[in-house]
Image 1 (tube, rainbow, N blue to C red):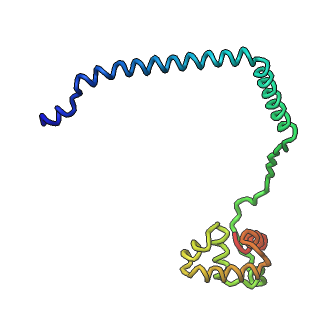
Image 2 (tube, rainbow, N blue to C red):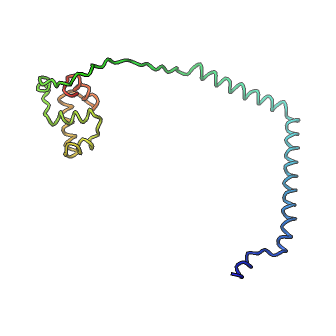
Length: 164
């Protein structure tokens, strides 16, 4: 332990040399800062017309860009459209439309899951079939309803009162 503490102690000669080096560095740094200040003052006095002209040009360019953007940007309008929603009447499936569409009970079940916003994987997990089976059912549903996309199939099914 003594040897370790002794190794950490600084020799007095090193401490005596450090102080003048730090003082020399501090004075040198102050002199460099003073020279830079003099150089900037000379630059500003000697080139003041160019600096003010450049600053004025920068202000006018910024102002022109801002005004140009304000005048030429398209104004966004938010349109809120009220959609009448039927008052809480219990859903009654149109059995005649169901028979006419040719959808099976399983296809209607998968279509209802689709209307709930579930993915193919989630539907497969809920009805205990593979994802490929769900995809097959969905392609048949699309064909029978004349739809090309999920959202379109759900809209058509709701319009025909096949799903709630």
